[in-house]
Length: 93
Image 1 (cartoon, rainbow, N blue to C red):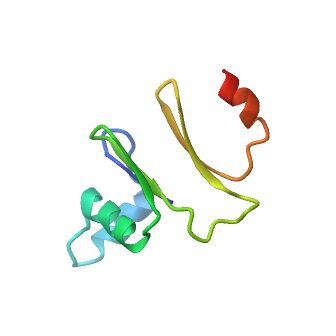
Image 2 (cartoon, rainbow, N blue to C red):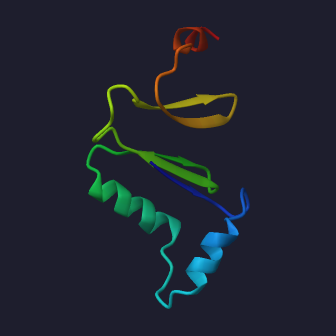
């Protein structure tokens, strides 16, 4: 799974900022990063949410006991990994 968020939505963890500042190589921006994920995972699904976020995931090598799924409800976007025991009641709401 991959999630890329704009800094206007969430600030990156200090550990990532510090690690990134130590490398002399140019940083990979959101679009090339998501495109690389999609190119290396032929069955990948990607979702772009305005200019603020991009989510991508694949069912490749997915565990039968922990399937991956995507859901949207009231402008809340979620990627799940695992079984949702109350999925039937969620679909009815």
